[in-house]
Length: 89
Image 1: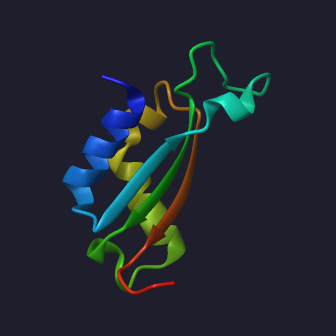
Image 2: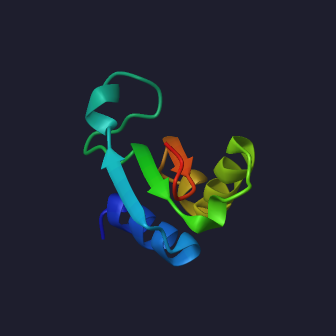
């Protein structure tokens, strides 16, 4: 299974999001730290979930990092996160 799919599945299970997009941006980081041939090292997540209501930006990021702890300690080098609650611009 591709890492993008693994990340999507874990976030779907943990947060039941209204919307979720996981983008593999590894190709943008060729020659940078953590990049490997074949990619799957740098990702950007856009997620909207009621689980984030009333949570600060830092709390939201910690929640996502916790859900993806195995991936972040393994092959994922970087994860950019945009996490919002429903109704937030």
